[in-house]
Length: 413
Image (cartoon, rainbow, N blue to C red; front, side, top):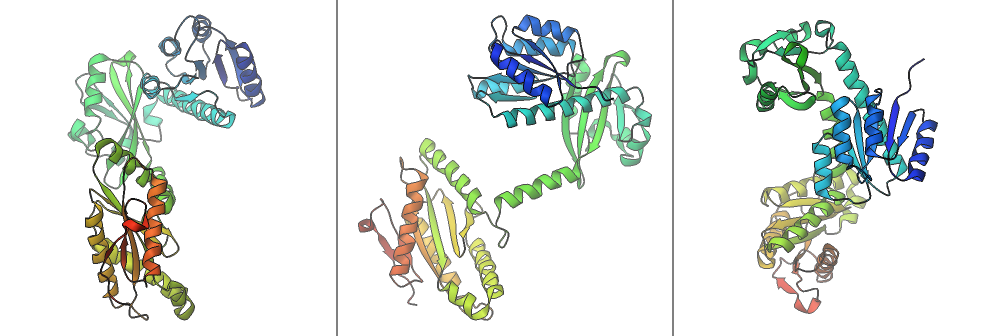
């Protein structure tokens, strides 16, 4: 029977640690529960702890100190820091000192259990690497070693096949180039533990598990190919942030970008503007020529817009035939000129089947201390004015009042 993984719960709240222990037992883990840092260190001395859940504020020691003492006697034990007093600095300090993750109370139990599962899986992987450390030749993944002066002294068969020039190039090889500084520090300090680095070699991406082996005074590196994982992550990111038809930023990502830009402007004062545009009579195009032609128009107009804006500008599909353009470092007047340039480019382009197509623009500029919601409302109002005034035109709106609207002369429809 496979041995259960043992979780150490360190919290001075008796009720909380008992509740956690009961839940973890139901999930198939063995548990040890303690209320002080000293008890936690004593439990770790007994060994066989896969993961420790450590409260940041303990009566005798800080959670970070307890974690450091546990890792000193059991380097492979993972740790999750739990606290009701969150700060970014503390989170950075915790993870920097080796915590697997950092959760703020009151945490979601599903999130905690997910972190525990991932932490235990990482512990298992590290144990497997350690188990195979004495048999690198038999390891299916590339394994190689650096001697005390930093030269490649051994490659297992998998490493020889995949990286034939590694011995000759040493730390200048693409696999080691970005990790060379860390390897040099590790070689000088002979620090115990492991670090994980990533390296790109050609089209492939590798994960390097680098550790100092004290018994033989060398650095051993295990390589796992994570190319597919990185590709999957990239595809997931693209699906989450881009519009599937046009390939530009989607509404969700644009909203996030806009939020960051408003905060930047509030802090540093540089202007920015947004334009919202809508394809005129687009429903008629779909009804007359079909949705394939409609999709073609959306793609073609997107390409025209991208050709006529700066690389720093962001164009996004807001929904249906509505689009947004974010223009950093741009005031209202300059943004209006950009919108007019885009309107003319689209109106003067000959499209397949429909021959011509026009677009209406609403333009406004961010005016601190407003938030993005009022900005979006105002640019939508500006677009509505452009539609109301006959379409194929640009309308500028400032200050949130229609009375302040500035109009740019537009082509007649």
